[in-house]
Structure formats: structure tokens, C-alpha cells
Image 1 (cartoon, one colour):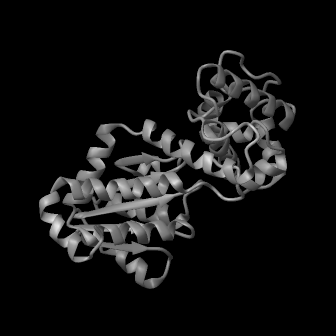
Image 2 (cartoon, one colour):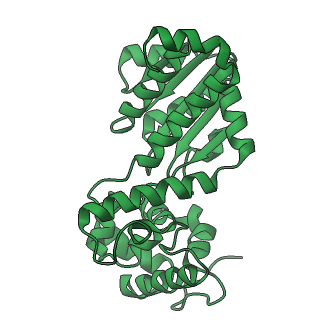
Image 3 (cartoon, one colour):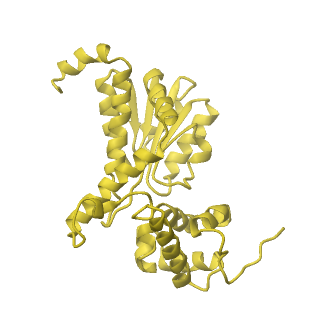
Length: 289
């Protein structure tokens, strides 16, 4: 049955649920807006269309068209729906609308912007820890520890975390390489993937085309795949065997990466803990503890 546009939002569904159901119908730019609203509801509820567009890496006109695609007259009506969902979640015990307490848990009500940023990091780490299951973590740690070859893809700001994960695994004598750009050398690294390879990709928001290309190639080569992403509606999900979500809410001009850093370090520690006795002397040799 074909959908017909309406001028009112269904009252029995939250805005996030409604967006999730319609996600596949949106354009590429509209999906960026959808991901941001679903994963950063507490911010989206109180931002202007211009601010939301900047955070979602798109234009304010796309935000308006996205609102209309959902059946609203414009962005103010969508924002009101976001506010209502946010208030409902707060009433249920999620103070920032996304499961964490933010700056309010650490500082006074009249906290500074500096304190607000630290509070968001605290909240993101807590939300990330609560969102991951023990089964997810154990499967991911096992995949890292047993893979004969680990290939880590992280582009732009994710390149730093890809490099850091490789460093931590290298200390444990786990062979890992990184791909941070579509250079010829990196394309060759991807082409050498096989069934003994574990491909790990790190993304923030919309996945870089190189990340999607790597995941599709990995599936073709029967390599195992693990994605670490801050988007609940991530476009890497359908191509990944293992998925780990981290929260990146924040009041700053950039996404909060505190939870991502914690997740990367926790994965490496998990690998270390599988055979602590074997790794202890190697770690001491590097004078890290």
C-alpha cells in the first residue's frame, strides 16, 4: 500500500520510532538528519534548523525538507515532537533524553561550557557501557584475539582511533594494519583480505565511501567484519557481522569521542585479559606498567 502524506504526527509513536520506520524512504542527506535526531535527541530538541544542519553535516533546507517528508508543516513542528519525546524520556528517568545524566550529574545547575563538555563525556561513556551486551563484547574481543590478520579502516577523524587501536593491539603481538585513505597502497591492503582477516571499521555519522567499499569487499572475500559506530541507523549495519555502538552527544562544535576512546581501550584490555600471563612480560618490556 502506498503511503500518503499527512499533516499530523502519529500520537502513539515517538518521533524516533516514526523516523526509524521511514528511514529507508529518505534521501541520502535526509538520512544524515534522521541519524542525528535519533541518536542526539536531547540536542536536536533545542537546536535551530541551522544548528541541526551543521551537526548533521547537511543544509538547513534539507532539514526543512526532511520535516516535510515526515508529514510536518515545517521544522518547528518536528522540533516540538522532539521536545515532547525528550520530556517523556526524562520523565521515565533518562535525564538527557538519551539515557545519561550529563553535566547535571557532575556539576551545579549553572555549570560552565567547559563543565558541560566534561559532563557530556561522562554521560556518553555511561550510555555506551549500558548499550553494549556482554555477548557483543565477548564476541568482539574473541574475534580480535583469534584473527590471523586485523585490518582497521578509519578515515578522517577516525584515522586517529584506527591508529591507536593498531598500536594497542601491536603491544599484544596482534598483527594489525590500518587503512586511512583511498591511496593505492591502502587499496592493495584491502585487496589482500581473505577468510582469515578481521576487518574493523570505525565511523561517526554517515560512513565514508571507503568504509562501505571495504565492508562489501570483505563480505565477498568471506572475511569477518566488525563495525564501531555512533549511529543507531548506521549504513554499515547490513554489511557487518559484529556491531558496537558508542554515544557521541556533546555541546561542542565536534562530536564527543570520549566513549569511543574508552571502547577502543576496553577492547584491547579484553584481548590482554584473555591471556594475561602471556602478555605480562611483553607489556613490562615496553615499560607501560
